Length: 240
Image (cartoon, rainbow, N blue to C red):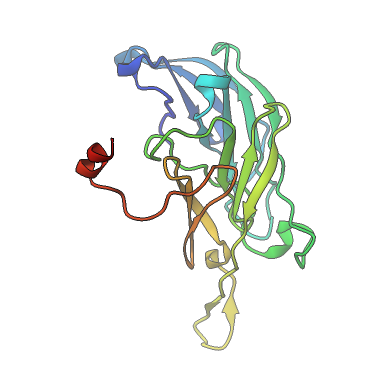
């Protein structure tokens, strides 16, 4: 992935953050774009398979000094280690520290399985959406995350050292793909319900993109949803 930059250089931003697969976490001084330089690095705990470092959520770093680093699984049925989401303190960009890992999602008691590894498909974090294109101001407390067969998980980061899951949406699993013989089927990526999300922070809506359709979600954690067509600028000015 490219650098995750919470504030552009033109607006006074100085640091970007890099998830470099198996090469870990890096803090990059971007103040001189023609001569960017790495100022610190963490060798993240080895995860063996899948993508070890892919996403960094930087929506809270300006207010809390915390970023959230994760990879994602490539295999299905948990045939690789679970991919944690790491909370990293970057208040001192020259000395970043792993503070904790976010809670691992567990199924509700009503589910016919006790671990998402038993649900088929991939289980683990994908991404939290893209801060630079998600409209509105991101919540400084809540962080939704796409989680493959665990759907959408919403983390409460009020206590940075003890984040918890406070909401979730887990959609259905879709069917198998037919084999060439026309009689048997095989499990495939189609069994992974949620690959990505898009958050409209200004309307308190979460769009979840699955392999069988798109869902638009609301939650009391984000506030009352604002639905309907956007108003024209002229109407907004008249309202003011």
